[in-house]
Amino acid sequence: MLALAMAGAAAGFINVVAGGGSLLTMPLMIFLGLSPNAANGSARVAILVQNLAAVLRYRRAGKLELSLIKRLLPPLLVGASAGAWAATVIDPAGFRALLGWIMLGCAALVVFDPSRLMGREAASTRRPASAARLWPTLLVIGFYGGMIQAGVGYLILSGLTLVLGLELLEANVMKVVLVFAYTPIALLFFLSEGLVDATAAISLAAGQALGGWLGASAALKRGAGLIRAMLAMVIVVSGIKLLWF
Image (cartoon, rainbow, N blue to C red; front, side, top):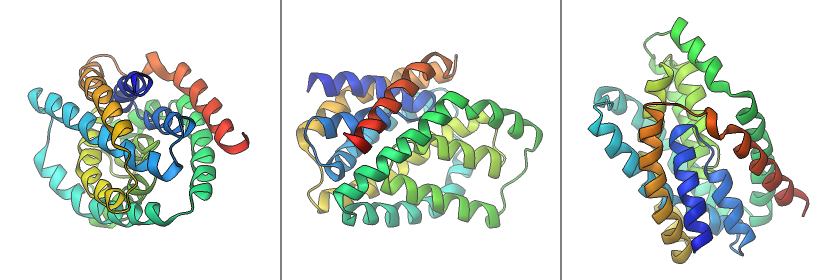
């Protein structure tokens, strides 16, 4: 419980500032004995609490744009529902291998730091998002988030900046709001299949609530550069262990 709470605090901070915190907590739960599917479900409780703390912090700072949130939610929630259902029926061994490859891919994104490119592109190509771009983009993001969750922050930032034209800071706020919105739906699917371990979920949630609040404060001030090297190293090691050990 102590290890999960400490990892949760780090993951909550990482998730809000950049993304990829679940790439630390999900492998840890698997290494501690949970099945990959149960780890996937248990992580959702902490994600919900973490993002509630971050949303409250952003609301206090006046960063929530309700009109944009209302446009993004419908396709996101449809995709997340389909993805969460798929996650509850996938074979645990298959999910373990899938998660391992995703982690190695996300490690490359952490090192590359796509947010810098996203920021430059968004600044030069800002445009209103049409339904033709918005629905496919949010359906894919929602499906991935509902099914995998780990690394969804990078997918959301890419979609919102490069495809929909949001500026990076605005996209980072929307990332937190969108994950908070679809997580209760995904969690219901996992709960219905008995894929949530209460001890692991509560331990993670305690840490990630603190990490989410601190991460939101840091994101408004400093950005994500301070955590990238350590995060990339841990992701690579965890991904290799999931795939080959």
